[in-house]
Every structure is written in C-alpha cells, then in structure tokens.
Image 1 (tube, rainbow, N blue to C red):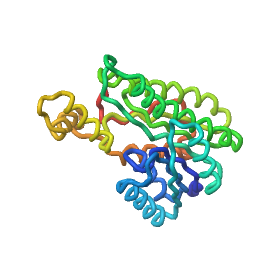
Image 2: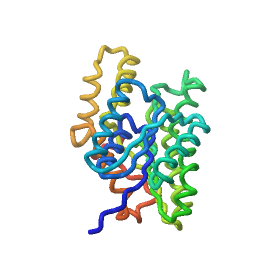
Image 3: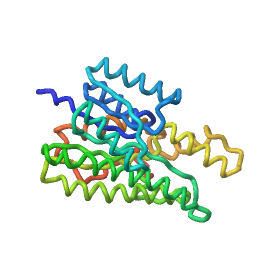
Length: 266
C-alpha cells in the first residue's frame, strides 16, 4: 500500500484539548502541522507545544505554533498567510478551537453570546473562507469541524454553545456541497463529553452555580455513569477519527455529522 503524502494541516485550538490531541496524532504521522491558539505563552501551552515537537521529531513531521484570535478577521488572515509561507497552502483544516458558557437565556449578556458565537461559529467560517479557495483550486482538501452533540440536543444552560454548534453543522453541510465537485470534503465530528481542560472548567462552573456542595469529581462520576459505556470519551479517540477522515480512504464521507458518544444521546 502506498503511503499517503505528507499534508499541510492547520489545527485551530491546537495547544489544548481535542485540538492538541489531533495535532499530536497528525504530527506523529509525518504531517506538517500549523497550530493556532490565542495564548502561546502560558506554561501549559508551552508544554503542549513541546509535546508536539517531540511527536513531530519521532514521526518525521513538522510543527509550528502561531497566535490566532478567531474573533479578529485580521488575525485569521495573518495566521493563514504565515502558515502558507512555512508549509504552503493548507491541505487540511481542523476547526477545533471552542469556548462554552454555562448561562441560561435569562440573564445571558450580549457580550457572552457574541464571544461564544464568534469563536465557535464565525471563527470557523473565517478559517474555512481563508483555506477553501486554494483547496478547490488544487482539487483536494479536507475540512473537519469539531462540533458537539449539543448541535442537535439542547442543554438548558448552554444556549450560546448549542446555537453555535447547530450553526456549525449547517455551515459544514454548505461547505461540503461547495467543495464536492472539487475533491474537497467537509464533515463535523460531534462528541459527547470529552476528557479535556474545557470539560474540567465547565464542571467547575456547573457545581459552583448549583451551590449544592457537590464536587467536580462527583459531577464527573455522574456523567460517566450516565454513559452506556460507563466512561468519558478520551480526546485521543476523537483525534483518531479525525485522522481517518482526512485521508484518501474517506473521500466519500462529506456533508456528514459523525458522532462519537459511547452510545450516549448527548
């Protein structure tokens, strides 16, 4: 079997959570991976980039990290230009950056709503808009949007997050149709709860708002118990699925929402 070529892969949110797991997997397989993140200087982000460098060295890949603010169109343009200068036009785009907010509609501020929508939905749109033309021109491209079961199942305290992911699903389908005749696929991977720093922060916010004295560990255990597999999905599982979806064997998978839930409804 002929090995697939090394691709230039852009991963937003590539220094944390699912995005970092995706970047680790692909750098370790020899791809040239450009990761974007708003904050590059924290200890955790530096450690994450160090792990990416090690994976790339072991697998024959290359990595670079650059500042990226998805809420700023100029930042998106500059990030994509610098990535292209280093690795050429992007072959693969993985939109993994995301934020959430535990806040019901009552009392929900415009600023918080805009923050979630701008990052999760508009930011992904901006990245796709920047990368899609070169993919279509070359006749090959893969776009994977990291969604959530929240796209199709409502959460009473997450209206902005649910709306952003539902919108991302609609965007995914439109982009898939636009690219279908040109060798470009677009899919959305929608996991349930995933063991990431975002989940830990979300749980801390939930238990604090409840005020029942429940610990985050107890909340986590309850979520695991509700899953038919009795566990929480790992970020590496999502990364492995993304790794398949960007390959030539997945060229017929487009316009789809692929869920990874362990059998859970959300």
